[in-house]
Length: 285
Image 1 (cartoon, helix red, strand yellow):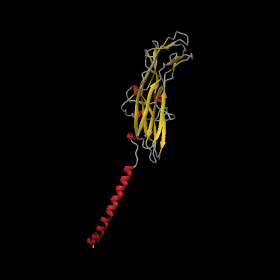
Image 2 (tube, rainbow, N blue to C red):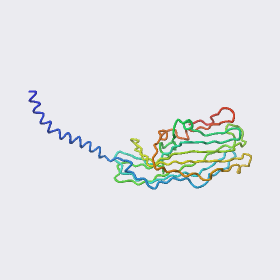
Image 3 (cartoon, helix red, strand yellow):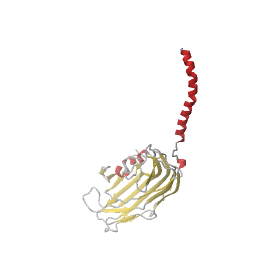
Image 4 (cartoon, rainbow, N blue to C red):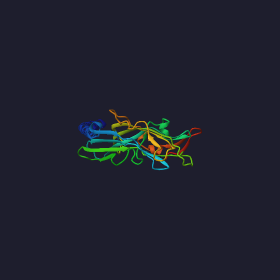
């Protein structure tokens, strides 16, 4: 009876086998044929990156602080994205990270204050996010990004742009002193950034780097604290900034460039006297 039963079932199984194979192959084929966004399907055009050809502006309007305003770094790109599949959302935009920072304010032979990012200074990270502190990992969420929600039936043409500059305040007097006597003699700043044009799947977090830009901003200001307010500071060194480099290869994005903290929250203000131990004036947030 067992042999007979197996004999009668075997031909039925042979009949069903092609159907099972066809069904399985159909499932595999449908998965393979699902449209997927890849780098080779994305068109990037009219990429530009520049720093305004104007000198840093020094402002001596306050008896408490000197302010300076650097020219703007500007980046823009056009992107054509392929149709976005159903249940997918892609964001195209700019991500920026600080890779190096030196920011020293010298007060004669007394000492200097410095804004520092300890993780960068100590080599614990290669870069730190320069996001606005809200739109991680993006630099911002206005002109800096465009969101595409599927399904879209045809390619989408879009433009994303960003700009960045420095506009800080530096105290005339020693920052840890109760005196308002001007002692500031020199300001030096040298900061480097990497800016990436990226397409990212909002659900899977898959990232496609489309373009990489490196740029640098330098400031060198001499100050004579004995001069009257309005005529103490002067720009020295180069009048114009070196222009950004649009790379012909794509650099990977370090993990610290994608999340908290951003550079503003990670930096600390140190007082480094000529003699004695350094002191934290303003800690990281």
